[in-house]
Image 1: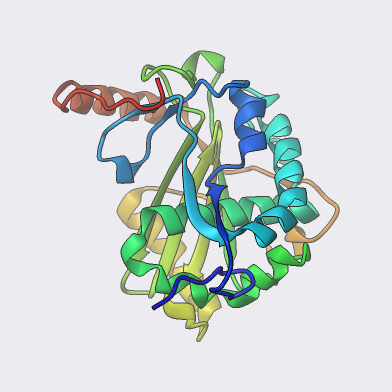
Image 2 (image 1 turned 180 degrees about the vertical axis):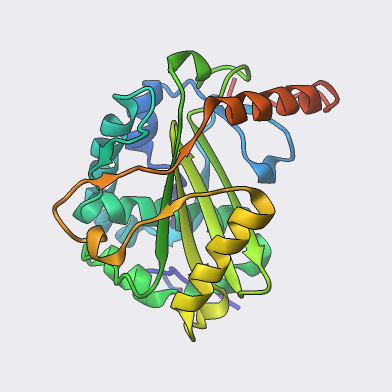
Length: 269
């Protein structure tokens, strides 16, 4: 089957390397050239240095049309990075800032779930909203937020030590037939819940059940953002907070696991 762009659904087009996290955002955080440290579950414990992950799944025309989202993403990043922790702080997710966040989640899904790329064509209504720079209907996804209670000493975006500025993973919930996409930006963890195979039957009930499973099985307790707040002009308060004691315990466990892992991979040096 010929590769198609998820935004325009065309296959007879030139494809370009779409940055998983916008190039403009990476440069805002790490400078130019990018000096960063990338880790994610799909890298199997490896750490990539000075790396700008891309995916060749968007055509050149649509990539250019999405540029306003990337500019809005820079504004969102500036707000998040201006705080050591966004716990109990209002985050501005209006208009294209929210679109950038959704786009980045979908980019990560394409890059990290290569065996299930057919899923993304089923989210055509989401892609339509993004490419037309319009609000994405809140009937098509759910957004949850959670903050790390941290200070600046917890973070290091250029070395393995400390918490990286970005992290991504996705988890399938078979019982509810949902996918939870998790993308952390410094101290802000964002979770987008989508249906598997674009089956939106009883989606609201399935989202609630998924959040319940996250709390029970993974001890993750993000707060769902009410649909009515997503397209309002009000900032969204990040009220769910991961305490430092839990973060310290996770870091200790990861350090112990890392001591037993193979040597780290590097790229772009």
